[in-house]
Amino acid sequence: MTKNLRTAACLLAAAIAVTASASPALADDRADRHPGVQRVLDQAVTDDKMPGIIAEVRDGRRSWVGTAGVANTETGRKRLRQDRFRAGSTTKTFVATVVLQLVAEDRLSLDDTVEQWLPGVVRGNGHDGSKITIRQLLNQTSGIFPYTLDPGLVPQQWTPAFLERRYDSFRAEQLVKTAMANPASFAPGKGWGYSNTNYTLAGMIIEKVTGRSYADEITRRVIRPLGLTGTSLPGEETKLPQPHGQHYMQFPLGDPDHKTYDLTDMNPSWAGAAGSIVSTVGDLQTFYRALLSGRLLPPAQQKEMFTGVSTEGVQWIDDTAYGLGVFSQKLSCGVTVWGNGGRIHGSWTYAMGSRDGRHMLVSNVNGDWGNPISIFTKELEAEMCPSR
Image 1 (cartoon, rainbow, N blue to C red):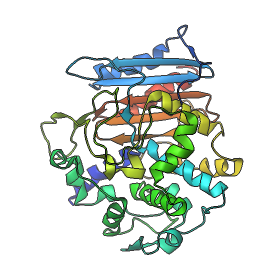
Image 2 (cartoon, rainbow, N blue to C red):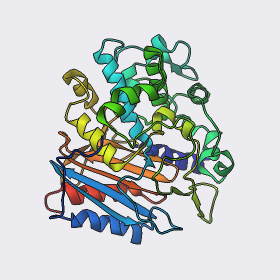
Image 3 (cartoon, rainbow, N blue to C red):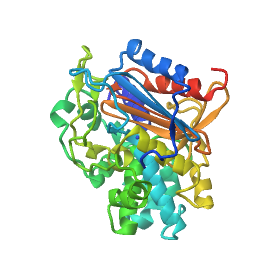
């Protein structure tokens, strides 16, 4: 892989991190249209040329939804609160929640090694599953190579070659083998590095412990109890459930003309337990509010989840610390928000809020170019910073 290609791939891998119905008690916040957030949404379309963007704010029992642009550039249809979209690495929070519930049930420990549950799977090129704990998988300190940076996979995923590969199927074991063919990034616990391979392995461990797929466990333990009717794990399903907008992509590599493609239909199995979930702004509000407020985990596991490792010095999102499937972000005004975000072809999502979950902002853009993290951060600062 050339230096430029590797640098671009690193940015892409970092970005990938970068994922119940509203309570009847929620009231439409008509008295305050959140002009600061709406202004950022409008600028995302006019200045950043995003096709469309949606944000939902909940503060206590009050709820507000703002949109700009369109869900479909051909029909001009506006974005809707009930629209499904691919939510990328917000999947990781669901996976980590299930792992921590299993810990609370004494079915595994965060100090268990990967080798204990997946013998011989993490081995070679400096990888040693007997020295890597489940905690290190979840907080991204394992040093395991991210399969998304594999020199063979990068051109298949992030250049127009993807148009011919968009319906290809990937198995978790295949993705881990791809990672093992590359050198480990660092020794376990000796650094921080975002790696989708970590959560692919976490999904495999859930399956080994429970005898059911990680998707079934997330559905049984989280999606159904919270009534997340717009949320699903698609497996190899290539079409989004209705209603949905379109997902638009400009390939960052190999396309100097930056042509825009509609990639709404695709096989998301390459993202799997690391980033394949489909959801809505309302469902992600309900999930993260429940998680942040302590409704999904006992206190001991809640403390583990929200113990962060600094990402300083690593090419990722500025001013963040990564916990177990969640991260904190310190805004320019000093306020710290918690949650997760994610990217998958044609879609970026951010779900962040106060540590108690009462004040949340969830946003999604249906264009895959530019710097949506900057857009999301501006939204958060407009909403969470008192002087903005």
